[in-house]
Image (tube, rainbow, N blue to C red; front, side, top):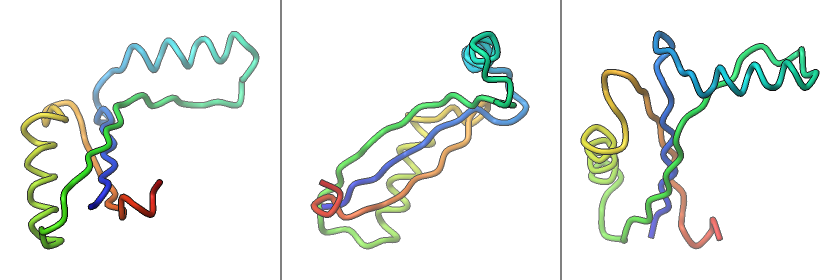
Length: 87
């Protein structure tokens, strides 16, 4: 089995009010050296054995494009690990 870690973040040109609120709160708490905050989503998918690397890449990209990320507003990247090794 493989463990796929998917990270979804807003594109640079998209305003992210939640991240801005966290950034302002950090400034109020005295963390003046924090220059920027990014906020996104994180998913873990466990994929059964039996697929080639190319098949898995195709499937994960399709899942991200169709469900996990909004193409107009977000970017994503993922890492594939051995599920047993990750535990």
